[in-house]
Image 1: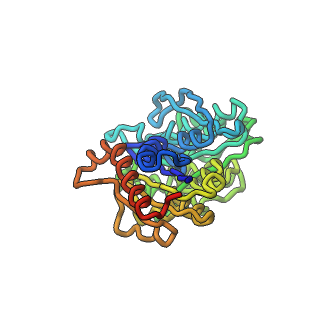
Image 2: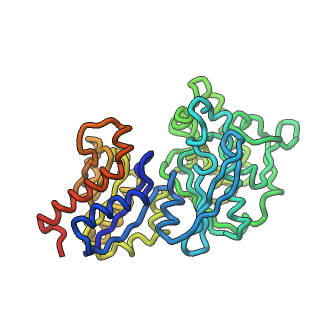
Image 3: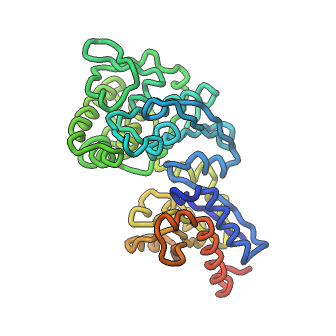
Amino acid sequence: MKIVLAPDKFKGSLSARQACAAMERGVRRVWPDAEIVSIPLADGGEGTIEAMVASTGGRCVEVTVTGPLGQPVRAQFGILGDGQTAVIEMAQASGLWLVPEQDRNPLKTTSFGTGELIKAAVSAGFRNLIVAIGGSATTDCGSGMAQALGVRFIDQDGRPMEGFMTAERMGQVRSVDLSCLLPALRDCSITVACDVANPLLGPDGAVMVYAPQKGAKPEQLGPLESGMKNIIDVMESATGRRVRDLPGAGAAGGLGAALMTLFGAIQRPGIEIVLEAVAFRQRIRGADLLLSGEGKVDDQTAFGKTISGVLRAARQEGVPVIILAGSIDDNAESLYREGAVSMFSICTKPMTLSEAMARADILLETTTERVARILKHGGLVCR
């Protein structure tokens, strides 16, 4: 009997790899001799490096980079098991989690450290790059990232702008100088892993949708939007690539737009990239059961999130999927139409969110065991 475990992280409580371990313990109590295939997953947000490195037998490289407030932080880039591909996770260097809640102001944060991570991977010899851009603290249209890679932003006096680029400086840019760009970037293939489809500007764009989540006040949105429009006008004019309306251009405060227009990056749904990199369909082929899950399942789960990709691949391979989650919204029923057999909350009694998160490991293990016992008793998965 072959059982596949393919969860995303349970945010704030379990990494995808830890979730796999908890699920395996639950399965082993019922089917001690089962063939278990653990494939920790992510959709391009936090945890992407850990999941992809663990699933491919790769490794991580640690470096010191500039955090979103200009402070030094330790961050990693991943090297996949093929030895050819480097994975950069924006949240490692420029993530919202690095900014204390009282200091959150997207006018003041920079994506410079993400550029330093990309530079470290390129300098180590990697030319095939995957950049996962979820979980950002920034709304600087990727200008800090670009600056770290050699792009110079020129002000109205024709002088290069000194200091880290931040969102509050976007409106001061009049042109860009690409002559000092890191030469090796010309030989790189960059794929952006993203789980949103927002354009850069307008009511569905980077500023209006996401800046408030990063600490922007209502009166700051207008200046942010104006600055964003100015800097993308300049970037697109310099490269001849119009990207502002492309799906995902507004991801990570415009970092997606900068990667596409300045470096010719290709943007794809993060879960598609991850599933390909870990050879997901090949590894689940012939399985009797697949268990997936994440912290919260709701009406957005079916749109580009990890579980949606799992369901699509499993349906193509004829593998039944059961979903385990910390919470399941009433409007998550669309996942049944996508192929889910059933969904179970791991919360076994009324409890606070903090209690559920603190006990996520044992709750996931216990619920997995209970689901397995039902299936075994009913002869639904029993060889």
